[in-house]
Amino acid sequence: MKPNERDADLVRLMGKVAAERGVWCESYKESCLRRRIAVRMRARGVHTYAQYAEVLDDDRGEYDRLLEALTINVTKFFRNRETWDVVMRDVVSALWGRGPGHRRVWSAGCASGEEPYTLAIVFLEHARRTGDDSVRISIDATDFDRKSLERAARGTYPQGTLEETPPEVMARYFTPGERWIVAPAVRDLVQFAQHDVLRDPPPSPPYDLIVCRNVVIYFDRPSQDRLFARFIDALRPGGFLILGKVEVLFGEARQRLVLENARERIYRRP
Image 1 (cartoon, rainbow, N blue to C red):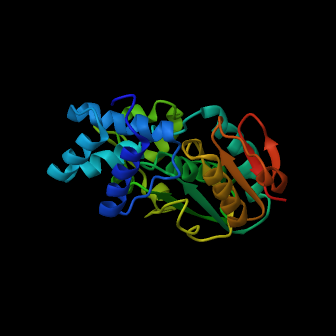
Image 2 (cartoon, one colour; image 1 turned 120 degrees about the horizontal axis):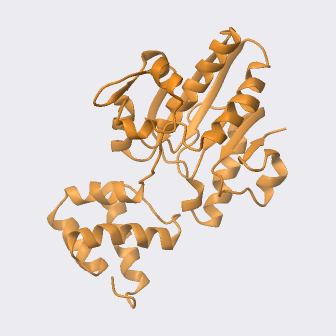
């Protein structure tokens, strides 16, 4: 990529992607957008956005590879174990403490499914440990990337994605093999759907818990403001919002939520 390449060339390229695939990336931070497009440009041996546009014309499959690069999300089961320990201790116990009933959860930006399946396991573990199965859980797991959702729906994973998972949890909720298979009891709690967090309304509010970790950081400030407001509006009173450790609420959103755990970025709607 030439350092003096005009911003207009990038705008034209993304307009081309939007026209062909209906994907608008104007809310991405420009540095993130350029960096991820550059990955595909290097892979195809081109140096300008105009040249890459020609690659897209010649190879329609490159659109899929570009969109995958734009939405890539590295994830594992029980990623950042200390976060999940706090979720189990403070959030899940609080949701159970409200008595029998239905609790709705939204995993926004779920990538290939490790996060919503981890949530399901955490809820099942709480019910098992307490002997209280009076709470019914349903988890809406959404992502923009169709291929990631297809992998998530299959529910099979390489062992490396389980390296942070407690061994006893692996034994209870997975069938080992060349690819580890998520147990039916876990899969039954999760519904996957394609969804654009910035353009589409929340799937089935109100929610008791929304988890969106390491997604907001890729958007510019105005988009973050809109997304935080959307999350808060989708929470029922007393509901929790969990962000990634490097993501911080600001502006009006900070006034509308109570910070429950600063280290783990756990907030509650009063």
